[in-house]
Length: 203
Image (spheres, rainbow, N blue to C red):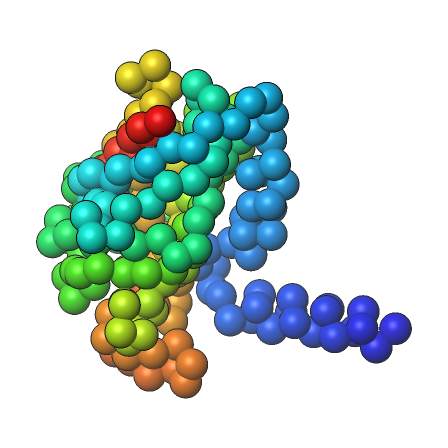
């Protein structure tokens, strides 16, 4: 009974820590279920990011995924190093059109640089909608960002490249480019980013 109450309290605390525009706790809790859908034979792939989310050439990322269709079941890793370049790649006017959320922007601002953390991406059902999550700090431990994308991805290159165009990247409330999450020290920047980027798998 005490253990059940403890788990319930932890979940409640996590929900309170996020506002309505923050990444979904439900989305994160469903990651494992999404990543288990691959099935069939598995292949080791190297994954290269380009655009508003870019690979760090000094820290390549590889993972096992479904042979011939790596983004069908899902991909995850920890730690994964990603570069947030000056531009987030997207057209903010497209991301903001018809949205009831606060305006997004098309640059990373003070977040620019290399970030290290847990990454996952999985198809919702059989696609073309995907759930992406990146929970990271800078390599030296400063800053913190929790980025979530729930958007449409387009496969090409015989299913080995997945491209997102003008999708909203949700940035969690207490994200900070230079401060810390624990203890919470700002400056905080939870402005959503409009993203255009691609991920290519190489066997």
